[in-house]
Image 1: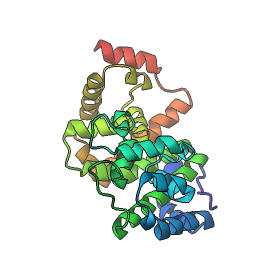
Image 2: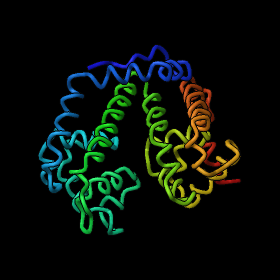
Image 3: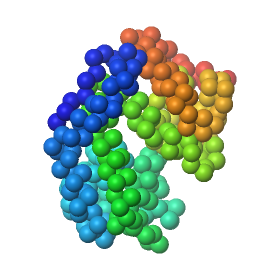
Length: 262
């Protein structure tokens, strides 16, 4: 397996990774294990007709989960089967009850739930899942070298898709707040504490939007469809992450008290 090269942490490491990402990603996707998994998915997914069949094939499941950053659930087959079988049409479906929005995205994408149509025989769907899987595996490998790189790569890849979705500003923020890597990036970039997750969800939304207006001049996530805006966001994340690593950040509890008091 090709190991991404990241010679330094923080902003220096991120700039190096940006400049070499295309070549490194190409080498990574040519690694034997990645190619085997991708080829197996391409060859076999069209034969799958339900969630039970998908979770029984570990290679197929690995690609499906990896496409949504959920590879750590590879051994939770009964749980993933339920997520897929219940779909997302019913508000009470299992996937819709999680704060982590990636489960609902996985379930909706494969369409095995009631009143849903599965696109697994669609070539465009198959290639999209493989592309997401390969990107996710590369991000995971980069994160093994430097954790912040995984978060930054994930945000740079997924934010344009979210920014351009036909959703309200609030809905986009709820998606960000429910996606652990994106939430981590925005919390750090906006200098917000993890403890903020303990307060009411609508209060959290107000805080995110208010801080985004002050830091970026707009609270509309649509701005991150532009590469310049994403770069500004990720740069702020990297700098604050590096400061936190050397003890230069204000304590999370103190920030939380300041936010709730003001």
